[in-house]
Image (cartoon, rainbow, N blue to C red; front, side):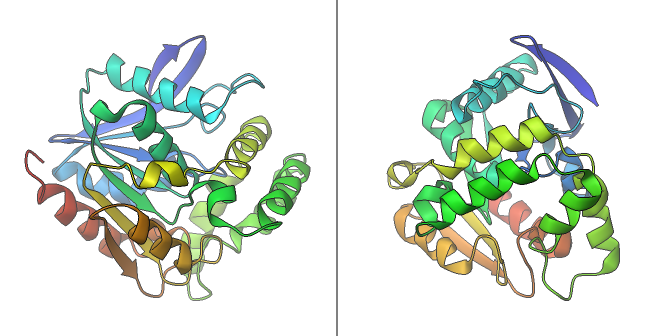
Amino acid sequence: MHRVNINGLSVAYQLTGQGPALVLLHGFTVDSRMWKPQLDSLSKNFTLIAWDAPGAGQSSDPPASFTINDWADCLARLLDSIRVKQAHILGLSRGGILAQEFYRRHPKLVLSLILSDTYAGWKGSLPDPVPEERLAACIRDASLPPHQFVPKYLGGMFTDSATEKVKQELADIMFEFHPIGFRLMSIGIARLDTRDILAKIKVPTLLIWGEEDKRSPINIAYQFRDEIPGSKLVIISKAGHVCNLEKPDQFNKIVKDFCLSLPGK
């Protein structure tokens, strides 16, 4: 892991490979380790940057005032520190919401967007009262010990056919969740509505969805496809919310083919 100090926060990140920059943004119960299949495979074609967002993994917990805008600006500072001037931005679940806000605030840094199993904020994609119900559960569950926390969230990440090996790999990462980070990330996305961003996206955009996603159902994928001009949707069959782990070979090929097809890559 590499580290950089950004506004008093120690931010950890993985950096590997060579080629065009591809930034990997994780979800809110995990950290950069969720991208292991991508770090292993896609490093042949890309310079991969996978951070532990403040409040996750080996990074510091942010202050209580931290918002989605602060995470986006922190990411921009990280890229500047390693002299990345433009990158493909790939975000899954909460990482996809951050990718949208990052594009809103720092569009010149974004070569393309890859949004996977995500939301236009919970408020922008889920019907009432689901966003507030999810938020209440997250705030309550943030205080649970890991052995109680992990089973509550692990089941919604995969299809019923996912292997025990891949479930255990994710469970091991989730076991080290940050209560403060999880709480702040939940607050940050629950009442957020990014639908105003979608129609204004002008960079090539790829949508990747697990067909059997239980947390971000497939109808949300169609919402994104219909609202982002020129976006392309690829659905991975027999995959759930964390499709990059459940179907890594398919996921990697989809990402690679998309990024390498773009002018300037």
